[in-house]
Length: 367
Image 1 (cartoon, rainbow, N blue to C red):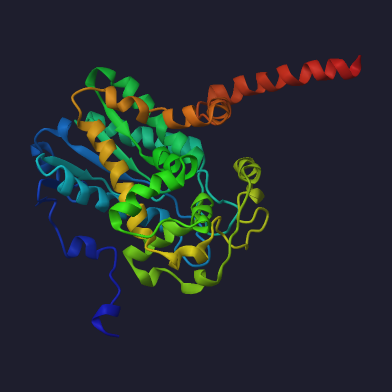
Image 2 (image 1 turned 90 degrees about the vertical axis):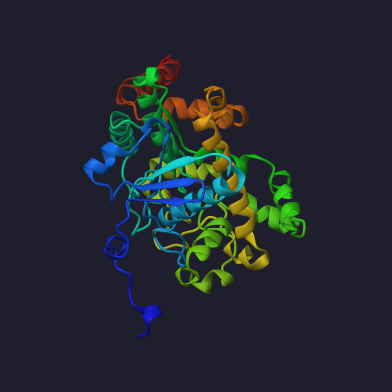
């Protein structure tokens, strides 16, 4: 075994670097898991710092990416954010507090063995507790990074953030997650319009019709996730993806997966199936990493700008799924009726709505 093959254990993170704080250009980085109480007390201007919180589940990503793909991609996305802040906002100083990652999520492909799934109520309570504790510790700005784009997962984090922001409204607490905006950019916006500016910036060839189709179906363990995991460590990607064609599932199947475990798999009802919803074989067609990294960086920059802006106005379109409400009003209505973590609404209002629909039909049949 040569030195490059020596395993790096989790404990090495602490053995090899005990720094709780360091400077990186215009950034001051603080490690939440390494700071002691006195050092924490001495951190100046906590209300101006931005706490970065990665949260994504362990989940099946085909048979060619690790179960931790969403989780480790969070860290890559945050590294992209730090790079773009140094490049595009070099005239400003930022204090970034790196919170330890949370390897949990909801709205997962729980129909596959290996996926770790918890309820949306659990994610809501977890996030609410973390956000509340950070506010009481003196922080006012948080960026929640998740590369798990499940709707329920995003809704749960959003509801927790809204609860804490309402509770501490007088303190101007700001908690944002770019999760829905990233999903909107990829799945709802015109991919040709979205990616053309990045293609021109990077000097790449225009997207072909086949590539546009591949982007539209890039829902899980596809082009973006292969690109990100490969950028982290190419040894984490099994080249078998090159031989795998498209697996495309309808929205109907995905909605059933929110309710029935056996449908929450790729393909539905096949627990040992392919485990992806994309066309992985298209990955080698171009440098997808450059395109997706540029997109993620731009979105992250917009969110940081909103967090530090003196006015709350830039927060408007980034809170409460504003992009989805504009594009998919029916989806937004369904979300508000059926997917909240509020137990009173789930246990009372929804059953009443069902009864209100069923009783007239029942009376009609009996008549």
